[in-house]
Image 1 (cartoon, rainbow, N blue to C red):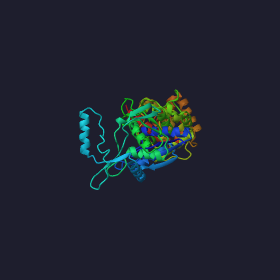
Image 2 (spheres, rainbow, N blue to C red):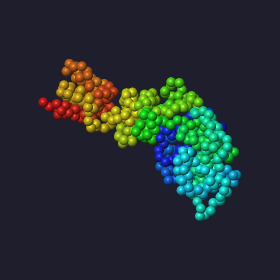
Image 3 (cartoon, rainbow, N blue to C red):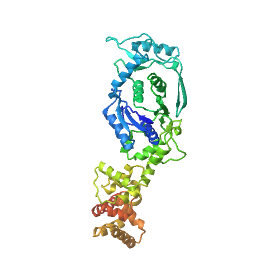
Image 4 (cartoon, rainbow, N blue to C red):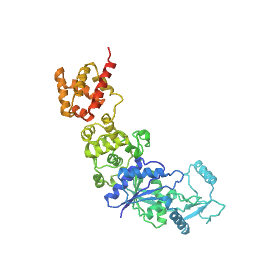
Length: 469
């Protein structure tokens, strides 16, 4: 049984880099009918928070990355870590070390002055020290001094590291708490993790972890270290590149399917295909297809991908998301409002759900100002007569539907002997605030009589005030 794991530290929100790692692990486990484990590495008690844990869980749920096991919490496994540390000491694979911080700092300075790689010198390795109440000690893993650690990375290829390059790392702090490299090894061993997919910032930990696994006579997983995601300027990804927490993308109106599609292409490819269904991602994904070079995050590309989903997902899904957004904004709407007509038109022209809702706000609340370009082009003195005539005729209209409204627009066009644009466009800007909407007769019907009349009257006042001679 193949098992992957996503193991975030809850010291903040889940960012796109972590979300991509989770996606790759999830896709691989789905493809091979394996299991996907979520593990919360919360041993950093000073920085880990319950809020961050919840943010991770919320992001995983929104993205639809369901896990077969977990979430497991490392803070609930301390007894197991201490048991393994004790086992390593008893079997001669670890030892107590009493070296002070001052000694280690001096050693580091001497090594750097001699242009040597800073490393622990094994001072306490063979002393057989035992912990005493008045003497703080740590536990170090007794790393082999001979031989080489070899492993084949699915991204980086064959990697070999001489054991002489690795020092005896600390696996338990002086307060008895386990360190990262120890707890990760124990978890991977106990949970039967067969494939570790993670960022390549962890690649230097891998030889150390392999040596601990071997000391415990545990199977060694296969590894795939994925290059980091960079900004488009080649620097480490940050908020200034547009990258934010996953749930901030949700709040900004991105679709989870679109974000997954964008993330899967940041470090993996299948020919030149850009848009994938979730099933296609599962079917096509392979570890060998992971890119060896870093990927660049591009917000414009993410917007484009999101737009493709907005245009092509079932209309009912988009309408439901629009309703959710309106509810969040506490904007009332009639249950019989013709959402499908308006949403289907505007979704071709926007990048996010939020932009889609913003384009429709005139249907649910009065707007504070007209679109500047639309007002300058349309709301001018020649529009006064058509608007006034429309106001008079619409005010007398008893049957408020698109057919009757269309008849009035056509009548005004005929009476004034002008083109439809000279009547319809001023009406459109008057009632919507902009120059684009569904067919004007449908738009006016949707808005209702009172709101339409009030907005036409307001437009007349706007022209009179701003173009007074």
